[in-house]
Length: 239
Image 1 (cartoon, rainbow, N blue to C red):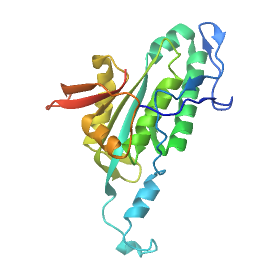
Image 2: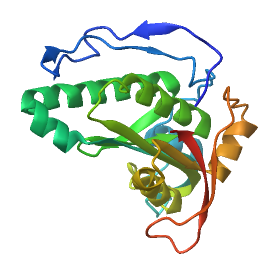
Image 3: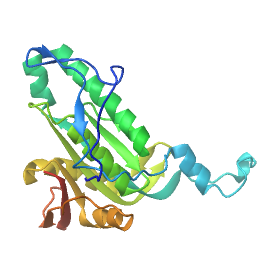
Image 4: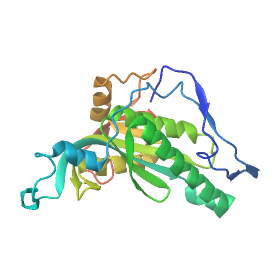
């Protein structure tokens, strides 16, 4: 993550839910951008736009002239984020506080994704899957979210990201190696005792786009990832 700016901002009440944290109502969060972002934003992407860009004709073809397949090969950055410790948080703080926190997580996730040009693909209970056209804004989304929820002592927001070719299947589902890898990296954060991981290749693509964090990122070469047969070189985005 990383940014040259130093401004602070607050979410309005309609974007930050109130819940109870350590016996007191939680108010709006403020957070510093100084350690995370560089301000780069990718174009907004949706499955409809992806199909539109891949269309060969005008869009008004006869039904018999439409493609026979229901998939599209694309290159995207995939991100999985999970509120680790949410079950324990629910047990210790009660269901009302847990629901309020989850509402806040989803509201802020959507808001930040829209502003940074990445897309929420699906909700996964206390987690989320996102898709970006480029790695840089997706990295920025992750840093934004980790910083925002960093004051919840019982929770860790853990994030895994990977970039590569995948299939957009039936208009709204993504299938392929980078999807699976991003999910596995999210789980691997616990093993590595960090909060956000990406592959060295994905990080190199972000650097090629001009991503320049204020400090060098730690490398984890030759990592053994559960479910993979080959070691993977990783970059620690957030520790």
